Structure formats: structure tokens, C-alpha cells
Length: 282
Ligand code: ATP
Image (cartoon, rainbow, N blue to C red; front, side, top):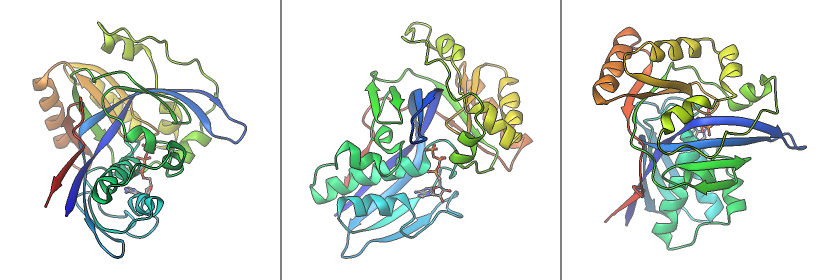
């Protein structure tokens, strides 16, 4: 039996760094949605774990035990042939590795009829892995372990752009100057939520821009597009997203960016609303 799972990109619509624990971990307050663009993982029972990686963003992704999908199988104590089709750039602030790990956990549990590991064990794979087991609109607090499901995500015409520079998350946190900022101005106003999101921030944007100034070029280009309601960086970058007024503005923006910067990664996407998680095939 084979199980196919989808590992969507996560987009931090807001990301506030509210403090730091004594062990160095940063405390976050973030509103997250998942995109209908992501990696695809095929899992087949096998006596030994073997990983193959393919796809447009496969270059440089580890195929050994450093890969989070292998770590996910090890955590469950099961073995499988894993095919990972990478559509998402790595070290890009859209949770590529974390989402792969979450999807692999979910798929292997289905394949072997075993329950998910404890929340603490899932968190040991990475701070964003518990988050990536969720769908819809999610508020993430603490170091990633406090998750509140806020219901289905609002319909959005999104664009994601990555200038193809890898930004390691620790580099960005090290460059963060103010480590205690106000939390989100909660509750979100559901009637004018784009305006509400626009009033929040991503505290990692400034340190990421200082590490990779091209991120500022991406944001400026997105903000200059007709119909752009908001442009911001996701996670620790370098991927930026824009919320566009309508499908036409969304398509025009992607076309414009692909022409102006064919070397950048630019996609149109929408937010996943519900449980589009896995598909079983035989
Ligand atoms: P986040 O948004 O959670 O901060 P990220 O986008 O910064 O995540 P990842 O895509 O998880 O980062 O990649 C970070 C590093 O993890 C990569 O440089 C790569 O070497 C390693 N890695 C391990 N497993 C994977 C995977 N399945 N896909 C991509 N990178 C992986």
C-alpha cells in the first residue's frame, strides 16, 4: 500500500517576536495560513528507509538522515520508501522541511495504523512541525507549541516570491535587535481582516533584509503591483507574500515578476481551508 501526502507551504501572515526564554528560544505570536502550493510525498512500507528527492527545488536537499522526513520515520520507529517531490525552496521561511516532516508523520501513521507521537515528541523535530500538522487559520504562540485553531482561513488571492537566496533561521534571529516586542493586537477583526493583518508586523523582516537586501527589492516590487493590498515576508525569509485584490491582479503580478526576474521563484496560490491532507492509493 502507498500513501500520498501533501506538504503545503505555511505563510506567516504576521510574526511578532514577544520575548526570549532563558534557554535562548524566542517567543512568538504569529497568525498562519497554509497554501495550496507545496511538496508531495509518497510513502510505501519497506524493510529499510530509503529517500529519493526530485522536483524543481530538489538541489541541495539532503537525502540522508539529516532530512526531516527521515527523522519523522525514525521518531515513529517505522521504515518506508519515501519519495519527496520538492516544489518549495528550502530555508525559505515557508516551512518546507517542517511541513514535509508533519506530512510524513501523518502519512506514516496512516500507513502503519499507529497514533501520532506526543506533542512534545513532534516538537522535537522542529518548532514549526506541530503547526504544520494543522490546517485553516492558526495562531501560534510560545516557541511553536501553543496552537489555536481559528477556523477556516479566509479566501485570499496570494502570491509568493522567493529571490532564491537561502536564509538560515538562526542567522536572522541573531541579527534581531529588539527581542521583546508587543504581541499581536488581538482579536483579529474578521470583517476587515486584511486591514487588521496590515496593521501587524513580521519582526524578522528587518534583520532578514539586513542579511539579504534583495528581500527589500522583492517587497518593493510586490507593493508596486496594481491591486496589491499587503506585502510582507513570511517566517525568517526570504520568501515574501502579497495579498492581491483579485485573481486578475494575482496573475498579472506573477507574470510581471517572472518576466522581470526569471531567476526568482514566483507562484500564485490560495489559502487551504480545510482537511486537504492525504490521499491513499493502492
Ligand atoms: P521555517 O519556515 O520552518 O523556518 P525554512 O523554510 O527556514 O523553515 P527548511 O525548508 O525547513 O527551512 O530548510 C532548512 C534546512 O533544513 C535546509 O537548508 C536543509 O538542509 C534542511 N532540510 C532537512 N529536511 C529538509 C526537507 N525535507 N526539505 C528542505 N530542507 C530540509
